[in-house]
Length: 201
Image (cartoon, rainbow, N blue to C red; front, side):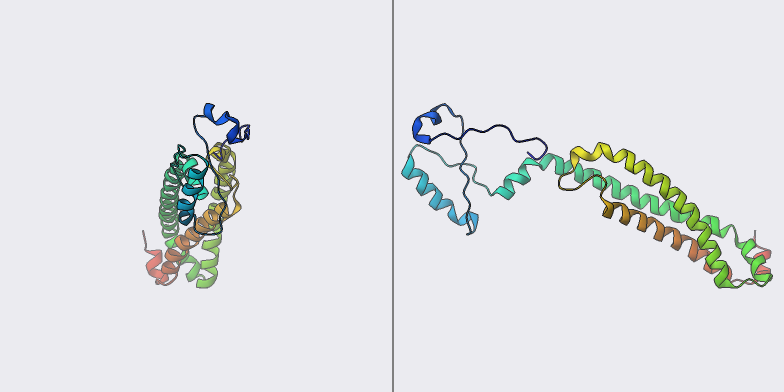
C-alpha cells in the first residue's frame, strides 16, 4: 500500500523448486496494448511453463493501486463531504451575520447620506469594515487549520496537508461571501430616503 514502505522481496528461479513453498505468486506484465486483451496470451504462456499454475485475480496496476487505498479513499471522501458541508454552513452563517450587521447600520448610513456622503463612498466604507472583521476571522481560522492539518497526513497521498490551492479556494470563497453579504444590504440602505433611514428602528 501507499501508506507503508515496501517490504523486502526475493526473486528466485521458478524451476529451482522454491515455488513449492510459496503460498501465492504474482506475475507482472508490461504491455503497450489494452491490458484486458493480453489475458488470453498470458494464460497460454503460463500453461506452457506449468499446466498446474492457476491464473486468478487478473487486474491492471491502476486497479490494484485503487484497491490498496480503497479504505483511505472512503475516509477521505467522507471527511471531504463533511468539510464541504461545514464550508457551506460557514458561508451561510457569515452571510447572515454580515448582512444583519450592515442592516443594523441603516440609520448611520442615512445620517451619512444626509450629511452629504456619497453612496459609493459609503459602500466602500461598509465593505472595508466588513472585510476587516472577516479577515481577522479568516486569519484565526487559517492558523487553526495549519495546526490541525497534521492529523490529516495519514489520509493524503500525492498531496501535502498544506495544499495552497485548497486554502486559497476556501479563503477566496469566504472573502467573496463577506463582500456580497455586506454589499447587498449596504447598497439597499444607500438607496432609501435619508429621512426614512433616520426614522428606521
